[in-house]
Amino acid sequence: MRIYPFLAVVALSACAGKPLPPDWQSNAKGALDASVNDYLKGSSSAAQAQFRDARRATASTGRADYVAQVELVRCAAQVASLDFDDCPGYVALAPEATPTQRAYADYLYGRWQGLDAALLPEQHRAVPASGQLAPLTDPLARLVAAGASFKAGRITPQAIVQAIDTASQQGWRRPLLAWLGVQEQRAEAAGDAQEVQRIRRRIALASGS
Image (cartoon, rainbow, N blue to C red):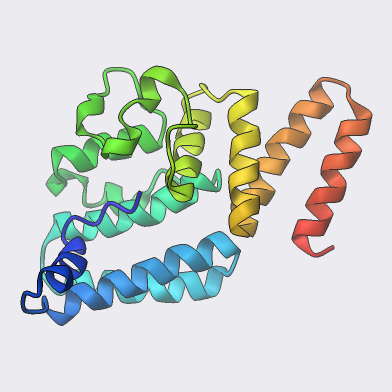
């Protein structure tokens, strides 16, 4: 899921035996990976510190599209956790973003009407048409797709369960609690008191209460 076209050079160079890329690329990738992982685990302060390092390293290039990519990665993790803040860091850079970045931002925030899915990362291209999460094998990609579907008003009960199971299997507390909250609201709306209590017990356990 982690669409770092410039950061991927680090891994590709190592595999091909080529000279290592500039320090800023490896520094940015390491910090951004750590930031996403900390965020999903619920460690907000650590995630923010790592993100600042990733953004600072990338900004040293003076490339707005590179920095926009870093912002989109962070916002994708937020969408996976149902935290929709409209990605202000990316929005400030949007005039200089690439068409693929603009399409991905629209996808994340549920602006699917007229969306050119061919511009999305490959694993997400079928989601706007099918609404299916099962084909996505990467856990974070699956959660991002679920969050985007939720924002677009296209989420299904099955997809909610898939999102909960995915977050649970990875030990990602933040999205797990967010999706359990959605499940709780739906059980309440259905008048299923027994299910509400079951979900609340799980929420309490996951939150450490």
